[in-house]
Amino acid sequence: MDFALTGEQEALRDTAAKYLADERACADDDRAWADVAGLGWLDPELGTVELALLAEQLGHARSPLPWWAAVGLAGPALHAGGRTVRRPATLAWAEEGSGPGTLAGLLAADRAGGCVVAADGTLTGRKVAVPHAAQAVDLVVAVAGPDGVELRLVDGSARCARCPVPPDRAGLDPTRPAATVELSAVASTPLVPAPAGAGVLAQIRRRTLTLLAAEAVGVASRALAWATGYATTRTQFGRPIGANQAVAHPLAELYGRIETARSLAYRAAWSVDAEPGPAADRAVAAAAVAGREAATTACETAIQTYGGSGFTWEQPLHHWYRRAWWLATFDGTVSDLRAELAASLLDEATGQDAPGR
Image 1: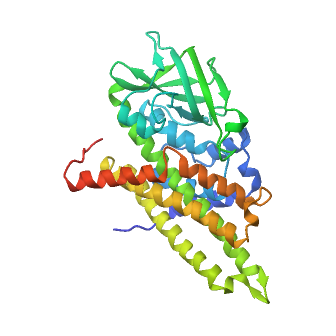
Image 2 (image 1 turned 45 degrees about the horizontal axis):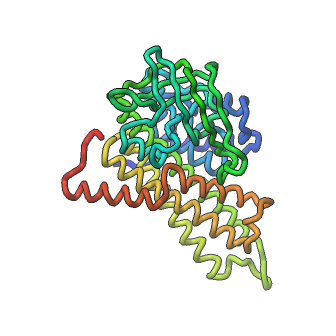
Image 3 (image 1 turned 30 degrees about the vertical axis):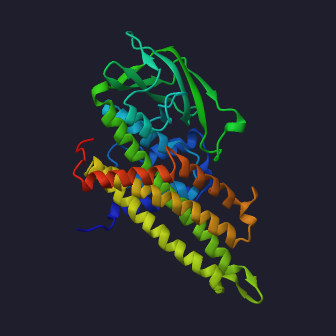
């Protein structure tokens, strides 16, 4: 079996890296979104491996675009409803007082809290911590139906009050904003009925965690590049600081950690499309753990290499560190993912896997 990237995949990755090297490409505006669409990054023909290649480059550049929310959180629901991703989009699922507020918690509970759909298709309820809600034109909402969770689409032209989270609760990474969304008899369109809602939500979680694992690899590789560059140019006592084992060995170990995380991320990306179910869940959990730990460790090692100066706001590394910690806490912690992976492995060992979950 050939595990190498195809020529088309390499071209996609290299084109993304070249485009994102331009600082103007990392703006969060309509022009940047139009560029993304023009480059084909929203095409429904792209598999999860191709999306992961793009996510890694977007993490390397710390792009503020809501691309990951559109193709990861909203994309599977839109595709299931016969639509394509063309505009900024996101998923609203968490509610105050309805459990942990994670996608995993929603799947375990098989309910969507108090947000309900009326007989005329209008939605009423309140969703919290909605990623990129202020930028989203299409809002996919998880609502409680008589047969479980269903997914419905709220168009951006509908009257929907989006309440930004106060600045003191803005989160670790300002480029990953969240907002509270108030829905009061807002018109909606059905995307995924309740019997199929849980399966689509599971696929949303797999794809999103995989893309963020690949993004974490991009963050880690950027931090490593900064650290190695500094270690080879910063001199002390007449020689580069990278000549000291105390500096060189942690960077070498970090390289190995990042390559492992990259391999697991692309294994998960392949698995999401090729073997959905418990096997894909295990691959995704392993990739998410490795990617998150690689990103935080890389940024911390780079900060140490810079002698602590990398921790200041003036140093770009500080902002990548914030992205790494945001990634480390999305939809649960590393400990949560480890526990999930351990439980799944035990189920596999005892023959309790549930195919098609």
